[in-house]
Every structure is written in C-alpha cells, then in structure tokens.
Length: 156
Image (cartoon, rainbow, N blue to C red):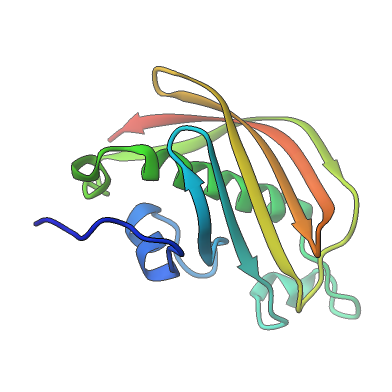
C-alpha cells in the first residue's frame, strides 16, 4: 500500500503510525519541521487533564522531568523514522528505537498545565543502529530542559 508523501505539519494520527507509544504515554502532538538525518521540531500541548499532573503534584501540578526527557526521546525516534525511506516507514511492527543513555540532563524551569512544550532535536551522529542526539525542550522560547540522548534500534 502506497501512502501519500508526508507533509508538514505532521499530526498525531500520523505520529501514531511512526511510533509505538499510545495514550497516556504518547508525548508528541505535532511535528512542525524536520530535515532527514539532521533535526526535528515538534511539540506537546499540556493540559490539566494529562494523567501525570493528578499526582505530581495535586496542589501544584508540574510535568515530571523524566517525562520531558521521554518527550525528547520520542521526538528523536520520530526523526529517525521520518528519515527512513517510505517503504521502511510503513513497516511499524518490526523495529523499535530504545532510549539507552542520557547525558548532561539539565532542568531549568518547571512545566505546567497550559504550556506548549516545544521539542528541538538534532542528530549528532548515527552509527549502524545507534544515534546520538542533542535535545532541548522550551516553553515560550525559554529553555526548560536539555540533554544528550543515545538511542538504539532493534529489530524484533
């Protein structure tokens, strides 16, 4: 089955064809830019209804830092999937991209309901099935978190 070429912005329905994550763990709502094997820009709109806000913390909801890192890792996986030839992109069941290492993680500001978490990821290098990424999350053009991520692909 041939699908039409991907056009920006890439919506959540298309993202679900590229990533295995589902509610409540899909943390990318839209891709607004990407350049194959170079970079991606995406975002997650945060709502008070996101389940992690109910317990972190009930009186002052804050997005857990580990989930900000996970959102950046999902954007990294999207960059790899979008960089694949179309016929490989359509094969969603045979490979997964795992987060295997986090370096230089830094958290600068809290993220709260109503924020739009912007995700910017650059591929630093790809060797075989492993990618090294530089990632930054922002809210209203203010850096809220940054890190280096290493992800590895694995065929099932």
